[in-house]
Length: 228
Length: 265
Image 1: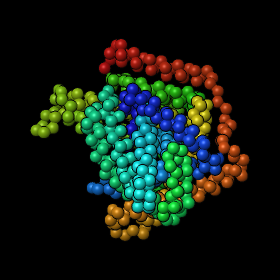
Image 2: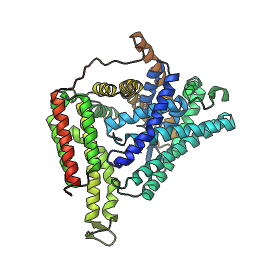
Image 3: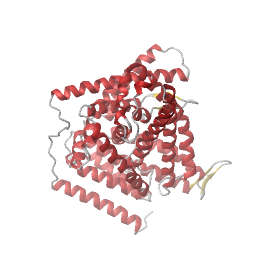
């Protein structure tokens, strides 16, 4: 889903940058108020781990493979603010060292995978937690969140590509269709993987999920250990 | 086979061999280089003619040759994304209406289609080239340093530098796990089982990284970490940098004006 430089128009890229900047500012403020020195190296090693995780492929329908995007699990374990910062750093290093993504399209990529891909799963997850208040609700929330986050991110990517009428040769319909259909399949894989990782973490090291407190203040904080 | 892959991977992507050389491009201030790559990429995005793009790409190639980057390494690093772009651009050759070159029963190839696809691929290639030239000729610590000087928030720069240190370790760990799994698997497993194995590997990785994070923090504390990472290398903009940036701006202005005022296509 990484959009390389040269796919998007300059105007679309600029708009996406402007959209992402407030989220960055809020995240930095949010993280700074709750983050101790200790958590910076911690977030960094976890970011490195998700970087490695993005290179592991798993099979999906019909011979194609997908890899974990990591957005949903980052959102659930680190909270959306720290999740966005981690995702931003992953995307930055990918763009610079693998040519996967770009400098000008960086804003668009962060919007798709960092903002949509982290905040949407988190919101869905929180809503399900509030409604069902048990482990089942949490897992359903994690699955739906991961699925929706992935599909929405793909649709946004399709929109950005399609609206770039100067540089991208296909129109909105084709771009959104191609991205949406492809990623609704990948999204199911992402959902299943997220649920499995979450349930393993819950049973093995549920103390790790306390990092949740990095969530925005207006969202209700939930003690994940209580819902086991 | 996997360890071979790992060595190759490290060689290609995380090698600072060429950025620590001391030729013209490596000597230029990282801030200037970041700015000029952004300028070159923007021009490539605005460009509408094949000629402009070819000229831009050849300038970047000349710069990479001048800074003694082996052509093979440069091409390997830059060809990944353009290959993927070629796949996306391929249908354009057949579906664009216009002047037909080749007309079989079902397949029409038109000049307009070929032109469109070529421009698309070339543009992406030019952008990737200029980005990769930046990363190949600049030490990672210098990029971070430049970002700090450009007032990027501290949390980003600190986290990027720590993350970068641990990426290769994490990838190594992940591949060791995959290798261990491969060597114990004899028949093809069902999809669900495979995802399950992967999930358990990932959660193990997660827990290990978490614990490593705590250890790293303690180690950093023991060495006097107080929440910020300092870079001792000084940066200054001198005459060479000014000349370089003027040349880049000159190229950009020439490219833009030939596109928009003279109508070169």
